[in-house]
Amino acid sequence: MDAKYRFTLQWGAESVEKIQVGNLLKRLGNRKSEFIVMAISEYINSHPDIQSTGQELKIVVKPNIDREQIESMVKKMIDERLTSVISANREIYPVIKIDPVSNDDIYEMIDNLDMFSP
Picture 1 (cartoon, one colour):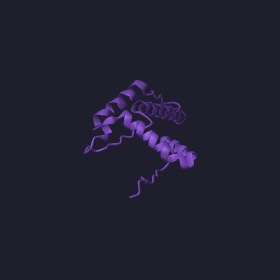
Picture 2: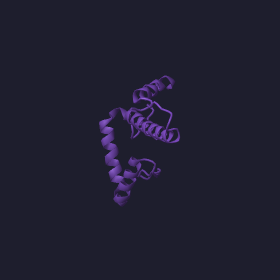
Picture 3: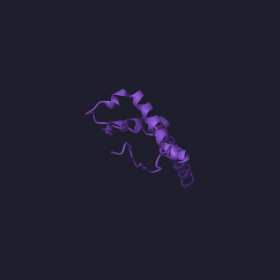
Picture 4: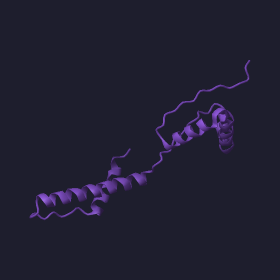
């Protein structure tokens, strides 16, 4: 029996982490195996429960951006869009006074969207 473990790995470049790991492994050339053994061994030492037999292994990938950052980006986009719409309407209808919607109203609306989340 051959006393070697052989694996083929492949992944896309759809995240910063995957690109970084791919670039590092490329640079390692023929030394990839030792590095992978060292990295996974360190992970096992940090998470000893992973070696429990009969237990299903679950890999949880955390997004690079959290909910707070997404909400901040959405609020910023809404603010920019509202400013643009209000400016455009003032050019088209200069006589009509348009009361801008306050940021607090918009943020309250966004916060209320949570009721639609599972």
